[in-house]
Amino acid sequence: MITLLTILLLIPQQATMIFSANAEENKNWSIVNDGVMGGLSKGYLESTANYMLFKGSVSTANYGGFTSAVLRFNPISVEPKQKVQLKLKGDGRSFQFRVKADSRESYSYITSFETNGDWQTITLPLSSFYPSFRGRTLQRPNFNHDILSEVTILIANKKNEDFELLISEISTVD
Image (cartoon, rainbow, N blue to C red):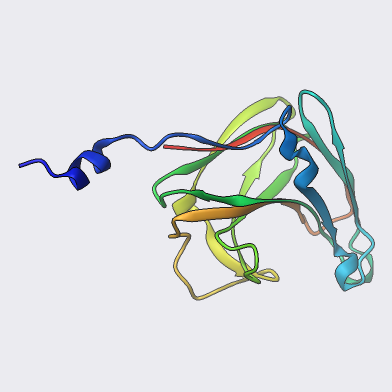
């Protein structure tokens, strides 16, 4: 006997667009630099029709060493088995991608990705995102929530460096 629940479980989860360069939500991005703790790093955002440019300079002076671009949005439904897909072009550097189920939480769920200088589609399983607060891994399970309300791209490679990252899309996929 097939139940409604069985039918719902068999329906594939739809991909959900979190960010598209040509959409209105470009205005919801913000920068968080290490100046919140005395650092001197500077990140900047520039919006174009084809991508969001996140660029800047990371400085380890004054106990700093990071800058980040944060996008808050109305919560979207997800399943822990889903993935986040990024369409971007980096400059060969490593970045962190962070998610939050509730943007009011002090900790994030984190994973890292590498860029290669070309346009890339990077797929990151939500279940691989581990909980972290101020650089410390927390004794909690990996991401297992049913909503997302914030994503962050952060650079913190423990060295002084300039960087540039072009982001055209962020979405969830099965």
